[in-house]
Length: 244
Image (cartoon, rainbow, N blue to C red; front, side):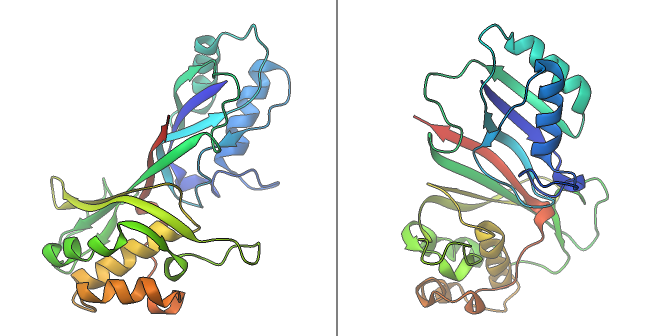
């Protein structure tokens, strides 16, 4: 079975199941098990961290052949809405795996750049009151395109020697309404805290704390201490997962 899931991550300790703490995966699995009357093991396209949101998370799991996806979707949404919503449910193709079958993920990070905070976007956007130099931030995006070792922007993996090489296909800033800026990035996959670290560094460029021309050197340094601040988790959203 394949689900397309959106959620507000504010009240959860990330997606992955953790005993004794509320997680998106734990809540979703519990609702599915109540409906299906058997245990489920969820595989997600991207394990979002504490406080991170999703609009296009994809989840796969095994279920009985006679399960009606639409009826299951309705039952799960009644149990979990509005914080977690199954946007679509369908029988997955043979061999489909939400994580391994994905060829790319897109994240969106939202910044409110305005002197006054907005209570209606506070849960999903990082409020930066000082003016940002958007042209400099856009210029600083260029070095991220292509295949690079992103050690400068990632938390060290738990497995020693694991590769932090990723292929970034798109990285850009988009101006939205009401002082909102969106950073959109698409890559083959992402390492832990990669997007938040990149956004924090680009905002430092916008604040004049560093120059756009420094980005190539930051990437090549391979040192997390050389990159900028870590952007808050609540501005980040897993927007879309791409499959062949």
